[in-house]
Image (cartoon, rainbow over all chains, first blue to last red; front, top):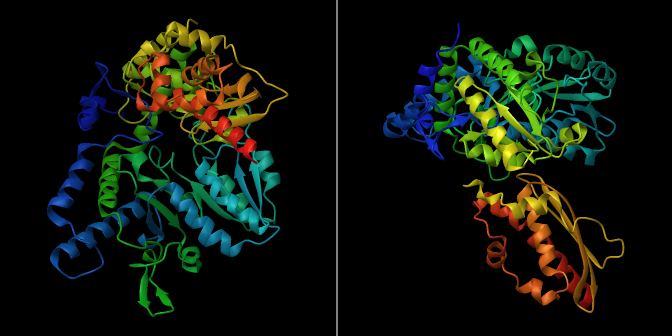
Length: 408
Length: 128
């Protein structure tokens, strides 16, 4: 069913905002999404009615806070079809989840001569934590892309061997929009005895993601890209793997018993959640999941596809515009990176801001991919459930202005 | 924010920089970058008795960062290290003559930051 965009937009207070006398056209949801009033109000309600430190005491408010927090965890588990809520660890973001995996899993399980297979399209969050393993003599290998921005699966097939202990791949590229065949990649990883990790930061917000169907060992994603507040994210892990892992952060809440010189770890998932948790974040995420479920992820995905088709047609008319990757709407999935003539992306974004069009500019936290593509930076428009064709028209109008300013 | 920052002078320095290039025989070089937008600048300087005799930059980045460094180099060539040490960000912004938002200010000042680093490194080498 087509989305009722007008109704959806009414739920997002920020769209009432005018910038430089223009209606805000927010085309940067791949960086972070805007938040609906349902999420904002749920957080407000928590602080006005239920605030207490969960898991710590037995009074009413504490009980409520604990129930709310754990209910959010069950909601997340169902959303990605995890086996149970023990497999859902609340983290700050995808980046933190990757660090837990690098420190707690990889540093303890990998040895000299082992290999980690990544791809050239990874975000820094799925590269830099693994670089630490090199000091143990672990080798990092990167699968290349094809000219159309898809992953080179032949190379991936050859690269994953019995030496491979971890395969960590983005589900959807934040620069190219490419959705990788994670189920297929996971099978290759498992056939070779490797653990399979999926970076779901860009996929979980806009398409149904089922961890059982993918059969990944770990999945990481961030709440803030899916209508939730910042600083709440999720590390999903198969419970047998999480059980065997050492905690990453140590201290309160993640223990059962503490002696002066030793401690007994708490059960899953709390073993990985040291200190007072982000209850407001979990509530926001829970409410965001309700919102996304109500609208329907499949319909959101279709809406983004339509906007992608539209923007590609419009961009075709902008002389001097170079797409970073093949202009096939089926492959780009709501993320379009581009450059205009020789204008730096930062200048493009700055001039677009004059029209209240918000796009991302720069290296997109993907410097290795930028180098691979032979560009220093790109401008990126990304779409979500609240975006409209009219916003794309304003974007195109802004791009013509870029050319006027730079006399192109 | 305003598009007035893209003045004729800024665009002229961006499109046709006077000072972009490499010096083979240089006394000091400094490199810096702005991770937000990926602006990069390298400055190489040849001194003659404490005076900036030859100076060039290499860089990639937005119009503001690249034109600012070009304007900066025009300003400091044939001046001594004291001139660079005394050049404040406020004064340099005045010379640029454009109004910059806090994020764009970082772009405009990357060249000056790099130049100051180069000069202080040079002064350190003189001491040792």
